[in-house]
Amino acid sequence: MSGLLALLDDVAALAKLAAAQLDDVVVHAAKAGSKAAGVVIDDSAVTPKYVVGLPAARELPIVMKIARGSLFNKLVILLPVALLLSMFLPWLLTPLLMLGGAYLCFEGAEKVMHIFAPETDHGPKPETLDAAHLERQRVAGAIKTDFILSAEIMTIALAAIETDSIWMRAVALAVVAIGITIVVYGSVALLVKADDIGLKLSQIGRLSITRAFGRGIVKSMPTVMAVISAIGTAAMLWVGGSIVIHGLEVLGFGGIAHVVHDVADGVSNALASPGGLVAWLIKATLDGIFGLVLGFLLIPFAIYVFAPIAQVFSRDTSA
Image 1 (cartoon, rainbow, N blue to C red):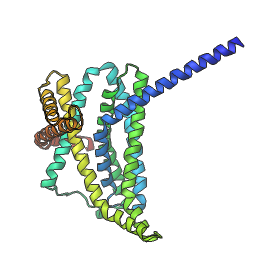
Image 2 (image 1 turned 120 degrees about the vertical axis):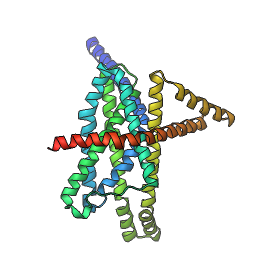
Image 3 (image 1 turned 90 degrees about the vertical axis):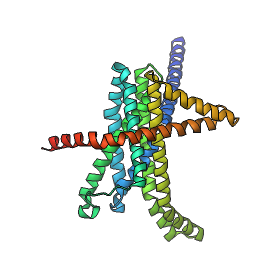
Image 4 (image 1 turned 180 degrees about the horizontal axis):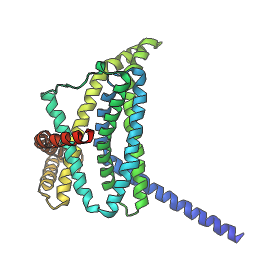
């Protein structure tokens, strides 16, 4: 009997330890996921464009294909690479994070630039391609874009996980990868089908208020998508700018970070709101302005240096 009680005590102790470790994983994953929020918003805003011009019946299957590709990117490719870097080349994480932040700044600035100088698309139009080929093309393009955004998400998440346990880092990163993929592509699925849901409600609703609500959904979707796109762009600039500023501070160049911190504290103190929402808003705004300026500086480099190099490599691989 005493042996059985001792065994039960051991089981209870192990259960408590497992529960505590599970709590730690959840805490680390939640913290890491919140740090990547800006990229998540942009991912949700970018993906719906890949189903434009395709049959409505194929919208959800396409979103599912992209989601599976996203999970493969995160869990099979990026998670092991991130863990190996954290184990053997931890000094490389900050430069990689800054590189990803600079990319976000470039993407955000490019979107702002296109508002004032819309880009003319000279690529193949949907009507010139059969639906199956266009679907494969769109899915492949979406998964490539997702890889870049997922790499940034995983790097940001890894930097936010403060634990020496490699398995806890792995589990927390896996939780972040799965959770973010569900959030992003669940919201994308809802967005791309919202107009269909609204149309259905407007047609079969038994009450006039239900039919009016359905018509309101259909009419509001272009505005909703525009707002989400704007929020995604602002989030890219804010997150990208803050990542680069923080990276510079880590590398010993803390001048910009100190200016941003001092201005945010000064304004919040002047408004009698020390350490509160005002300070955060000022800091996020200044980070976003820095990100926008950096992004505009990177656009010529991307056009005149990176793009020609990429074209050379693409010709070599296709030859």
